[in-house]
Amino acid sequence: MEPERVEYQSPGLSAADLAADPIAQFRIWLGEAAGAVPEANAMVLATVDASHRPRARAVLLKDVDETGFVFYTNYASAKGDELAGRPVAEACFVWLPLHRQVRVSGAVEPVTSAESDAYFASRPRGAQLAAWASEQSRRVASRAVLADAYAAAERRFAGRTVERPPEWGGFRLVPDRIEFWQGQPNRLHDRIVFTHDAGSWSHHRLAP
Image (cartoon, rainbow, N blue to C red; front, top):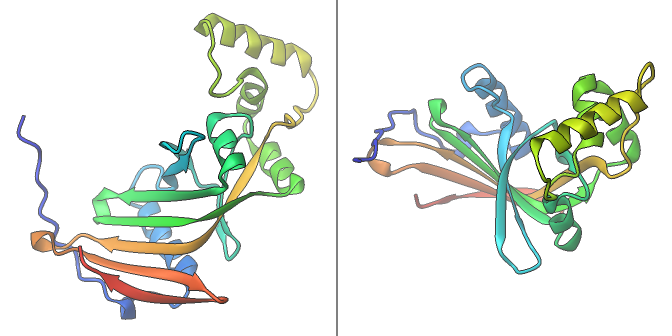
């Protein structure tokens, strides 16, 4: 099958087009993507396992501010284990309708228990129960086993608030590098990368 080839015709991107603070710029682009891309907060998160193999999966960004990019998971999951052993990661946002991509990399740290509690309380009840039912990333014999575990969680919390499981919570990706990519004609794409050092951000252009 001949692969589809898309010729990008987006406006050019220069450092002068971007905010001095790349996190502020990311929030601008995320807001623009939200009106054009389903689940614009989806990001591919790459980690490294104990064998030094890269592992990638899609997760949802749940908050972003000057302290970093927050997502939630089971701390005992594969990604949780990998981040405990090697607390660094890279996230990639791909917004194809806008011909844009953003890569964010840096150290990863757990959010506070209060932050995890607050977000867990905001989730739909079904998602809360699923957090108790699923031993994320572990082998499961069948779908029926999951259904039984979910039913057990329903019985456990019948008529009362679902508590946050102790192994479930958030991580914050604290960036030291953020790259903005804008597709351009003839594959001469624009790439502006911000790096954080000694308490401040600087930027430069990369060849496509």
